Amino acid sequence: METVSLSDFSEHLQHPFPVTVGGTTLNLVLTEAKPTIGGLPRGREPFSLTFRGPAQPLLPQAMYDFQHPRHGVLAIFIVPIDADAQGTTYEAVFS
Image (cartoon, rainbow, N blue to C red; front, side, top):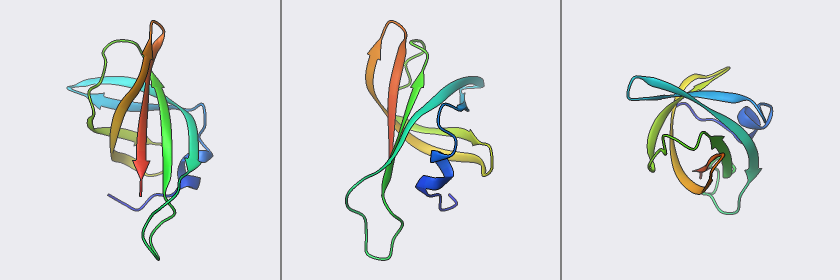
C-alpha cells in the first residue's frame, strides 16, 4: 500500500468512504483522525482513524478496500470498537 499520512485523512472528516465488501459497497464515514503515540524512528507519524458505518452488516475485523478521494483504493485493516442500534464504529491504526 502507498504510504499515507494523517493529513491524507484529516482533510476528509465527515466524508463517506465507500468500502467494498463481497461485491457490495458500504459507506463508512470518517469521524475522527488523530495522531497516536509510538512508531518507528524515521517512520511515519502513527495515527488512528475512526469510521462510523451502518448497524448491519457488522464487518468483522479484517482488511477492506476503501475508496480514498485522492489515493484511490486503499486496503485498510479495521476493527469494530462499538455498536448501537444506529450503527457501528470501527478503528484503523497506522504505525
